Image (tube, rainbow, N blue to C red; front, side, top):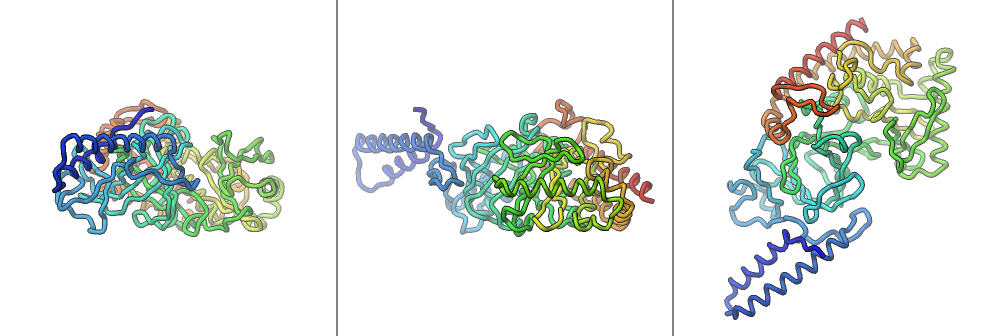
Length: 480
């Protein structure tokens, strides 16, 4: 048996203090015996916790508080940096935060402790943890119980700065985002501006998407270690405040996913392209009849695109939500998102009897000229107009006319992204310094996901802004 002594200290300390403060005289041997009893009890707890972690989803008992580094508020002493206590009087417990090396940057701080500070080693194991939101000098939320695991595909295996999936025990509102249980902490390690995902998620609803993930820029501390700037974002799931479709077997969230795993539920179409994979996110563990309905609908739609679209263009309205499709197309095309060619991270929802609705947008950290393939870095040329469903749709004058009209009407809103870049630059100025002090990668091109080197954070942001200006100009010349 291996005993984790890191959490024995508080209990031993309380035992000694109790003996010291007691008004009843204690014999030294009596006090020592009490101490050994406390240590034995802690060892038993350690053994129990190490053998039975507890799974929130499975309904097991959550680990003992002794497994977490949680402190009680004491007088005017503050959890961070020895400053004056400023938190709400109702917040009586806190997860310690040492921000000596990485000072407060003006953005929310997320502090997470895993059970016994267990390391997050994979994307499958859900580790019990606790989370608290911090402001400048003190916590601004109660402690939340949750589980945490790794997330991401190539980013998980090829990047030092990992992303995480968190699931709270109970539904919570976090940083102004609607109540839910599921969230993602996106590292954006490949994006040296730290803002590409944020920009696309914010502009998407402005130009008309039914839903895009809400998100907040934060800094993350995990088990006492500063990990940098993270985008706390909603995950893609069915819900009133997310993908708002009925939660039943006949309602689907589907991803074009060329990176699907062996354990994931995937169906294939062979109408337009041989073995095009469609990964089913909802319903989970879809029953056979639900799978059959989905693949039949996809194949019937693709037969229409291939054989009947040009002779019956008006019928397209029966198959897809054209407005959502065109909005989604332009978000992907503007950014030249490498994954957007129906390869991965391209989503749609469909409810039996309804229309296919493209979106929500997801995963733009290597978009906007930030990829290893130079043809995707040039601001000129179409990117996904000739790919898969788009190739057939843009042969239709009916569809093309509506697509051009959308760009002409909404391009001034897309241009506001240039102002948003400046706003984010100012907002992240100090946080970016912290991030790139922790992760010294600005001038490095060590991995496929970091094709460009920059001398400073401002240079990286300037590069993004110049690229987007040129991209908008090029599209305008094509539409005009």
